[in-house]
Image (cartoon, rainbow, N blue to C red):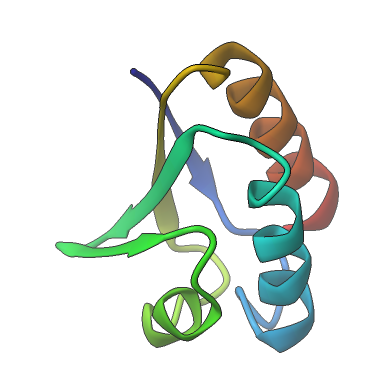
Amino acid sequence: MKKFEYIVKDELGIHARPAGLLIKEAKKYESKIILSKEGKKAEATKLIAVMGMAVKCGQTVEVEVSGADEDAAFEGIKAFFEKNL
């Protein structure tokens, strides 16, 4: 299992468009990708769960990746966050 923390820089937080792109990115990997914020958790492949976390700009999200392709998934998701959020 690998983890990283990311402070959301998008001024609207994780809203519909980037959440949709995140789900698309997460579905590329076999590994399970879990987002956590203030005790709330959501699987990165479930749009309603991700949107339900209501992540705002400046908030920290912990991302946990575990599974068969966790190295590739970790790098891909981390790059996605840095580019899009």
